Image (cartoon, rainbow, N blue to C red; front, side, top):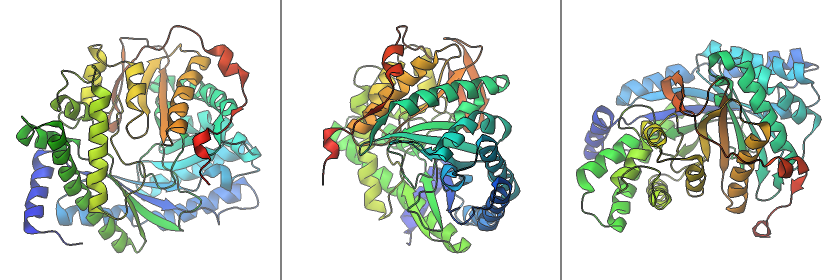
Length: 454
């Protein structure tokens, strides 16, 4: 793919003025050949393979970063769901595999590695259950390992037993990492309809149908869209505004594909997909909430917010698919509270509530992301919030997720500060009435009628 002189000049402006970057180059690595005679032997094979496959990721990404002057913020890896590789091992065995992942990530210099994961939307194996039991301790003792569990899908329905179990594990993870603001929960995602090629942490894993190794790219770009709307968006009707966003998303995606292809060629691995999600950061001006406000909202969270987000999300996708044949991952617009300075302000002034965020997730990527809630929130309430989000995903045949952080020792009106891309999370209020009875019913909700498409 070749860039024109005009595109190069536009890219320089996007980087220098508008906070544009490639958010992540994520190397997916299959571990399906890493099973050993026991957990120790498997852990060694996992460590060796990650180090072998990812040893050139940082250096190659840095070369392309310097070549184009385009920041690649994160260099990461994802692996085959560990519950598959470690099926039959107990909790302690799974923790050994997590430690091996963490050490390998440290050795090659990547900041996060995804794939301490299980897929239990229809039921759980011995390995799935062992991995889920291991999650709190694994996330407590590792620095770079991220975990995800898929508990629902449009084809299989919703596994309420696993939702309840994951709510308990989220609470345990929060308690074990309470001295660090319950940060373990920031590395743990519960999914409906999880995708196999997602490059974004914490939900990334290398799917079973993926090749031996593949490089996937996640772009960013809220600052670019915000700058374009500030400069050219005044007075436009809503259709023309959507067209302006679409054209901007096209330019962003072109650069993401160029970077992904060149890094993959330098590494000698296949290029996978470009995830065209607008991924915000805590930096001033790099906010999805600010984009929605420039579209005409006084404050993100007010009436009309879901309408504006739907337009933004659709325009980003249309622009992205025009720019590359390899759109994948989640693709759309992320609305993580702690990682978006506009969202943080909206929560702090009372404009944005948990209920409004749930409504917004019907039309955007992922779901309730980096949501800090009071540390004394009950397990059943956590399960109820997850169940609501899973229902949105299953009924609407889309990926949704919940990354909830019950911050031990903190309540509504307080804030937990993580720094970096994780940002600062204001503690949000949860419902005051109980959903315990429906959660404790357990069982598996059958797939919805719209799943019958054969």
